[in-house]
Length: 534
Image 1 (cartoon, one colour):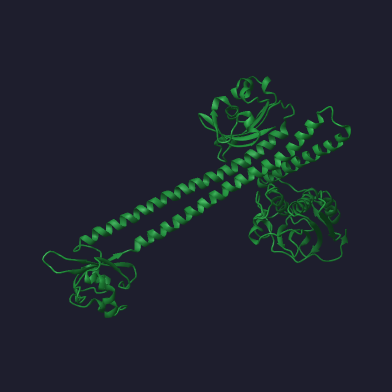
Image 2 (cartoon, rainbow, N blue to C red):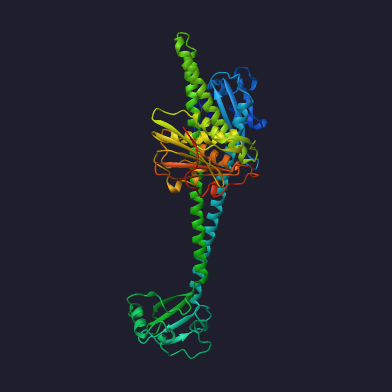
């Protein structure tokens, strides 16, 4: 198929959210929209199941659609995409300019699996959007409460006689207390009167008379009309403000208000926590969006490369004037490209089956050193790489197919992400089981990247831009290690990166999650003991 796209379908239109391949040749442009009734997607959603059109010209419904004529569509395969709660989102579709009579169940299952993965990420995106909206609403509510508190305090300060706010009136020259309300008496720690006509510093043990005069000098002299004063509150839960006022037919006085700010500070702390949660949710949302884009980009790249190779080889083979000696070379290219596609689809299917608890392991006694040697030999090495094997004879009860994938993925990872050098493969017996180590001579792995490398669709910071990969090879290594009841991790190496996989020699029973986060392990020392060397 020459192109694929993800379409969000609403009541009136279908919106092309992402495209891969030569979509513009079908009049499908990423970010554009089309009337719902003019496309294939509405029929997929109405059916509620995949729609396979092997020859659009001979299909009555497909042939009548305007996009079939305008986009010269010869074949179509589409599956519905749903949120995990069952709500329809849209479709995931593949299209071709020529009929595809070979479309069958394998292609349908593959597209359904990808649609399920897409639905999972859509759910996470929706959860983060809902969480962000709730946090924004909570932040607005808290901000409103703070404003109401400030307004309430302002009103109380004007109603001096009945106010619950401590209020004191001071003589600005001697800082003598001329008036205090009942709340002020309680604030100063005096349940009865006897405070009036006494200096304020007698009731502020933390401040001397000189220090208090210095702090109130500007407002007492009239240089400022209002001043907040620190150190006057005995309990620390009031904000003290001194204001210079001139009542009618009276000389200037200082009005001291001690506002209880306990609730306001609690509100500010709640608001700060809500804002921090909002920022964290926004960061999570950005990370999720980046992960989705990286996954779509990586998978489209990995699909496009072998498909391009297959298309070019097929086109060349169709040329009757081609030299006969080139036929084996082109057939080999077709075979390797098909195998690459098969590996990618198998990796995606295995990850999906493991996530749903459907991945099983058939154990049998195996000479592990023989299996490792054969599996490592399957990886194609470039002219700048060399493979060294240091294998201790071991027999273990493992799933041979899954363990072989562990070895192949680790060796291929070492070859793919290093410019050259020796790739060393060690196998040794430890107290905990069989330890496999694959070491390369690359740039190594940053400590901050080591845990997430084993998560699906994650890449290290030093991955070359021209060889991005899908980020599922090491995730499968950790998955298969956990399936064996073991673990996988990456450790420091004097030469580059050293990837370790530890599995028990005997069947430990139901496979656990492995030791350490994401099935990683704290690490063992280097391999030792008698081994065969190659």
